[in-house]
Image 1 (cartoon, helix red, strand yellow):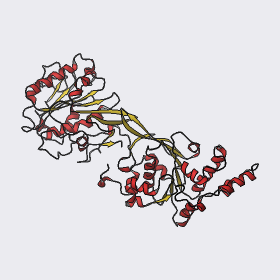
Image 2: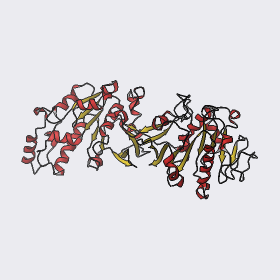
Image 3: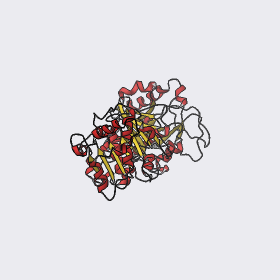
Image 4: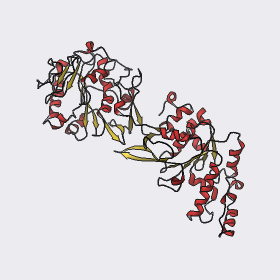
Length: 517
């Protein structure tokens, strides 16, 4: 749930929760109509209330399905200052619509029947219900945004189920168009919540149309906000995942993997514990801390950027070094040795980390001049850190002994870490590439070396099937429509969207995991 201190408080705060295209659309100076479509229960009402909270000036919700008492129970934030700015009108049939307030449907039927051969100006016989007219005209400052939730119930409540032949499209269509025109004539924009996901005629004549949908990704619910059209607005992204956590709508904008800065570790709240702090409160709250037995598996697909995966696990590396431990790192091919050192720059000066941080680079890779002397190359296994001439690649070297690299343990000398990305092209083609890693880690554990290990691997890699039963933490990362989703297989968690933290903003969290609930 959203913490009280993090909950939106102002119009600007709520506006930040909406897709930027929709914020621009709401700010238009002329009245506009928008349809919000979606199956029942997908979050249309939550979005509509979020749009009202984000809209400056007077605003009105006409609730035609749910009594106001039910809305207040479901959306507790309506009792906050931001919620109380929304004018609420209950228009639920047989409850708050007096008989005198309903449309005189008999008069409408008689008029249409008497003049069946003539064009009838339905605006002369169809007016907004008096209960709504009074609300719109009694205030000196009429609303700028009106939400009707839902439009179908609104039509049924106004026209009644026995109104002429409502199955005739032209008749009902005229009535609905007239009611919408009456609302727009007040100078307010109108958001119509529609209780189905297929398109309606209003989607073609309205200024905007959006669809809220929900589906499953490997047994976990995902929600999407999809823009069908917004007239006059440049649409940079048509799809946004969204969450309803805390009974608030929040759209999640896509983040480019190239905008991810050096990941930073959050302080360890309990440095005395024998487990390794993962460097992220978001990680610890969802998956826990890292133990000393079995690998932490990060399973990924081919579409998830390596830089994003690096941003997810790199805070663990910095945390291990900050504890005083040693680390052996084999980064993805796109992350060079210099990038690894830039990641841990805030942990300690490079001179203090020499001998504690070992970075593996692919066989034959050129090592930039000035690189720390702890960089070494990779044959079929991990190689020993022999001196490397600057600017030269490395050839095969004998396998390294982790017992020599990882002295001490979690209580003596800090917490050691083995961090491996075995997914480069070299690994994909090398025979027995995974046996080398297993043998290296197995020898070290048999020798009594205490360390945590994190392995990032593809879902189709045999290593995953060989080790997933022994992994105390098993996390999956998947990319959908340009967004990276993360969820726990062990422990089980719902679907979450990975959002990197701000670049170069000091002690900010390295990333968010936004739950799709």
